[in-house]
Picture (cartoon, rainbow, N blue to C red):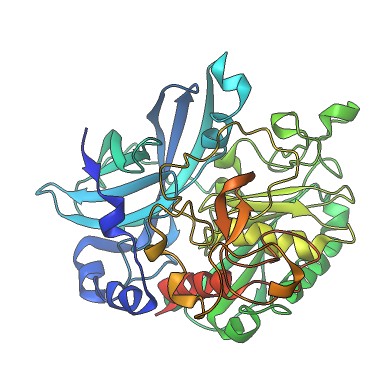
Length: 431
């Protein structure tokens, strides 16, 4: 198994990140890729002890909207990673991600049964034959190891070029060429044809939520926002625990992993397909319901309810997961996960630590005189420190702030550590 030493490759300081952003250039893009993008549909299958990845299909889609400068992932976030390699073995593109399947593998059900989950990932469309290699992160070591590789010949006549849908795309915010903007896509879920005006208003409202909070407020000019008017036959979403079932565009449902408020779209390929005609760096599904719930998975999608009183707070929290790779900082709410983190390994999320490699996190942001660990006491409100409790665990994992939007809905906003991580991700797509 080929391994990647994450401890060496993970960034440590903002200065290092700036240097990494210069590692690929526009000339590299023109040498290896066309202006289009390739969607790679795969199936992850397995159980708690093992997993495999299988190629399902390939789809040629419209313009690549990601950066044409930063082609290689400098963060090494995520439980998975994929690379595009030339025949000579040169890496020309890479990205990290999480998946709902990975979360399911940490549940008790995964110890007793096997399941398969469909997922989709984008790369710039290659000019010549390449190999796409998928990696999984080993829980015991924190390192990546290869789990599957798939050859891609851009001349293959079986690469699907069908138009996936006829959904209208509305522009919510446009600030310039997609190649140096974050293209955030809102997808309608549970809105009938007669409710599309409501969805457009909801999308405008969600955009307003985003730019009401820092650091997004100061970075508004770095975003384009699009709305996919994906019509559903029925209004709302599935609520299995109440025997409520709806025919909707991306087949979302509450009661994921038998948690009442965990709202997801289990088949992420359907979500990606809905966005196939839109510029897209980040996917967010707005679900037409008043019921509280949501979810956010890094470089997968974010998803939450439209009409609850906490819609704004949940949206920016879930986008923190799906866009910036931020971890949950709470540790007392109901979750289905068992032993989600190995305390002997440093988590990859930038806002939690097991102290295994704290130098690579936010130690540089703690002022002299702040005790480490920092007491969970109101006296340390609005101070960056090392507070025990986070990542669904009360002991052994630490967070940077007494309260933050990644911990509660009542927090004033994002802490300085989360804000730095969000800014770095925006830079990755725009600088």
